[in-house]
Length: 117
Image 1 (cartoon, rainbow, N blue to C red):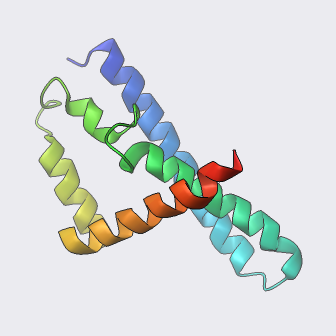
Image 2 (image 1 turned 45 degrees about the vertical axis):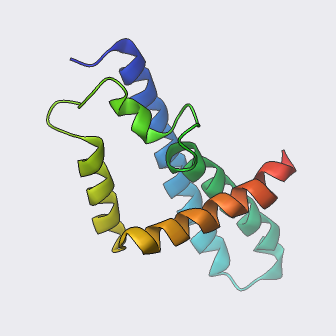
């Protein structure tokens, strides 16, 4: 059985993931217009996507990092390692490729997106 804290965190992680995916899709749509008027909008969607992605997958010190779901052990039959393996498989990346991707996204958030707030 999940604790209230785990359920709350799961809701926050799901919400951040939904917003990240939605912003990424909107970024793609704005990118495909080839019209300069959408450049600002595209950049806003890109920034939002990066911020929400980092809330879930950025630094483990983030209170909303997915790994905190497992602070008290496994969730049913799911372990933190299983989630990490599935994430890599869904992305089609190995550990090194993911680390480079993670570093790039986190760097964009730290150097650009969070500086805007």
